[in-house]
Length: 349
Length: 246
Image 1: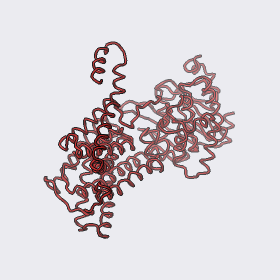
Image 2: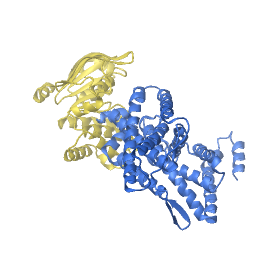
Image 3: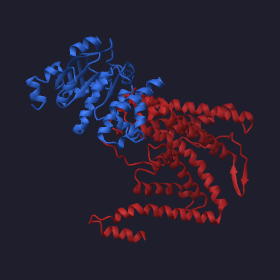
Image 4: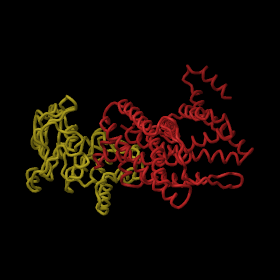
């Protein structure tokens, strides 16, 4: 079916006919249908395996979503792809390990929980501050420069953060003790880790709070105005510099939270972690429609889910995890370049 | 008539002295001086590139003058950040409207009141804007970017008004509008002044601007060419030939 369509599109390319448009429109849906079909057969065959794979995926997905929000917030407001964001997250994992080891908390006692909350607050604040400083030192002066200048600067900041991590943490991945409960329980035959619940309990409220800040508060209003037109925002009395700093602070805080959750669930960190996870989270932001907050969350969850199902069911297995994710990204970009929730802009000039 | 108004309202509101503004190395405004008194409509006319919009952008703090001073209500405002100038009482409806396209009409209006804290005052000013522009009331929940040019212009003026400015800067409010709408906009500008707001108006439609203004300044390539009472300038042969298609 798809093959004949391709053939027809090739034959009729010279005429200004629409088979290729038809193809573009429906091949995407066809692929979605195939994926849905594949998932459905797996689900029917073994529901419990399906669910545990999906839960694993969602756990990672919420972390991707937190990091993706940092990319999409910054892109939304100053159209900069902040390549250093993944590395900020990486520093977040290391700071978490550092604070927790200084506190010396152990599994799930009351002091353990308090220590975890304390670490969360400290790491979020530290990453927020660091991100604000990065913006102030590296990006602010380049705001009216050609777009490539801040982009290259962001790549540079990324290397600087990695080298800082390399210096303090060493070049080999390190294992850190976890303060999260290792216990799990079963619903039916699906095993649920308590750690998973903690991750959800931390990330879900953060995502909601984020949406609330952007949609409902005065500061959020200033953010949206600045994102759409900086000069017009200034004419409304919005302090654009402070608003951009605030945006970097928000993104940084979310990266810090993701850092702690990652460090706690996976247990290892490494100086180049930011490149791997940062790239995936950036992909999530693009997948969802960069600049779109809900899109970033959706993209993160979707990529987590795809990875989880691919690794756990398995489609192609863990080795192909990244390939599967990026194949999905490429296909989506071909058929819907603006991302899942991104909209092609139709604005009057 | 205009002299009477000026005296009745009393005194200087805005004064610009020997202002020079550059874009990089290119001078856009060269040694401009002008004044606006309480209660006046003052218009800046001139052809494209004369420096009219640059002047307004500089007053609003979006550009910094290289030389010269801008004094508003007795205090210097050159070099003051754009968002603080709004707080001093100067709001602008910029060239090209610059409404927030992905926000609704109501959200745009609310942003106009961004620095205000008095909820009752904002509500009554919103009411007033929606009375001036009933079309905005009809479109209150619509995304601003999907409206027609004329409606966007009304929104831009309304959004500036809702900040309850002492001095309202209007940059080309008639640009790209159908003739009927142009009349409506200018009538509304006259009404806004009657309600007590001082206005500095930049226009390419010199005829319409001179009709409602008290005084006018004619700019040419960044410097002042002529100034005087609007009614006199409207009869000045030089102005008529150059700007009124005489």
